[in-house]
Length: 253
DNA sequence: ATGGCGGCTGAGAGCCGA
Image 1 (cartoon, rainbow, N blue to C red):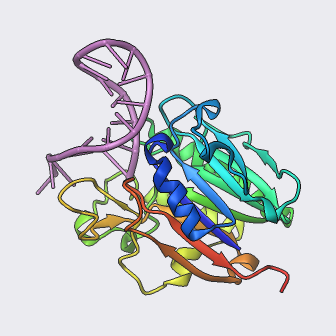
Image 2: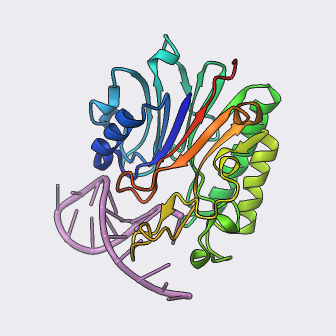
């Protein structure tokens, strides 16, 4: 089971890159963020792929998320939803094989920081509810928080910067604790202090790997114990964010 | 400390990102 996430920063501008990447990586589930287009205007063939169930949850110009589920995983169209706390089309979820997968784009917070905190708090409650119900969850996406100091390159560390603030980091830890979730990227690569997924688009920050880790695959403990890898692909695409792909052994085996 | 630029809309200059 291969689950991938990518903030594409405009699906129309990134269409060919996403198609190429999906053809090469062949993920079973794909979570996209910042599609920046109304669901009805998603370009084909990405909008309705032969071998994936596609769920687009977007709006004009801004934000928006999507989910793709390989049809072989689920003969009938999976049940898709956007949880009640959604805001600006920032979360979509799908239930497949007893696992809930969510594609999430947390508000940056520069425009409305309290709204970011409210969204993160609602994510905590959502994950806690699924945890209490015994539903396995994989929460993927651009969480717009660098989890800890080591998730920001030393030269980008700014304690007062949005994305690095103590209250955001505390909410990140609450999300993991209340949801019974594991940060799969960190768990798979515990000693790596260069594990970045976003780079500022100037001064060759990406090539020099001076970045932030903002994109995550969080998985319920039982599922995370089945993870075999979680990799960032900094060379893929021209979004400010790189895709992240986690591979899991089947839960049942 | 600051920084630059692409994607989007609407058909300009401005918002947004983190």
